[in-house]
Length: 324
Image 1 (cartoon, rainbow, N blue to C red):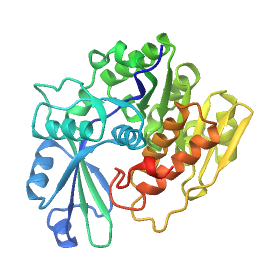
Image 2 (image 1 turned 90 degrees about the horizontal axis):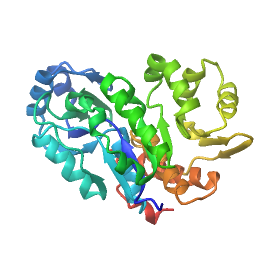
Image 3 (image 1 turned 30 degrees about the horizontal axis):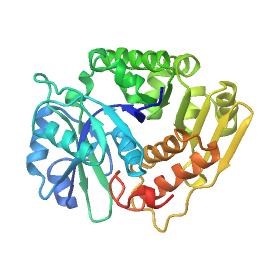
């Protein structure tokens, strides 16, 4: 059957709240400049109330990827958990506004909607404080097998492997995709996430994943090797599609004996690398779901990543479909 969506993403639904501030504000609020810290609900509310002139938008790694696919002209849908509160409404309105289908029922009890409070100082440093809240309450009940079966690819954020209930949701989605004859993509998300779940991630790659996304450090952690070449050979041996990003060195895409080395797209000035991997995945999957050669998929991914690192924020400022 023809897919209704190119890609369905499943991830942590987080509202990004971004405001410009100064070093004195960071000092007064005991914020570690340039770091990302996990905070509790009370701290999140206090910092949120202290922000001035903040901009709010739907965020989270996987949501950024789905927004990128929509910007390219693709058909994207998203599953993630928010609370029925103000920020939950912001997330739902914003992600729909960029063209992504999002119908996951909001939680009516429990933690409030997740948020990442981002403070940008004049030197362009970003200080992030994240409250995970409702996003970690995703369960298998939130996975609609019919929706999963309607997408050519189901793309899953590795961070979901932390909460046990979300883990069950991921497995349900992967099985539903394969039962419908569709494909499953996994992004490893973070090398520390790989450290926590290495054996289980390896099992997923070998038994349930068709397309793997990883950056260099994540891949080295997955296979516990010291060089990229060693990790590349290990990835090739899996016989799956693996799209491996290497920052300014571009990317390498493998599928068995097939290997493509693709240069990074040119960018005038790198302003903020947040979201580069997310948008690379968006470009790659856009091309992949159109049956384009793997090297062309990687080229589109590089173009999308170059746009996102040329400005603040993890959402395109220029429609990506005009750049490819």
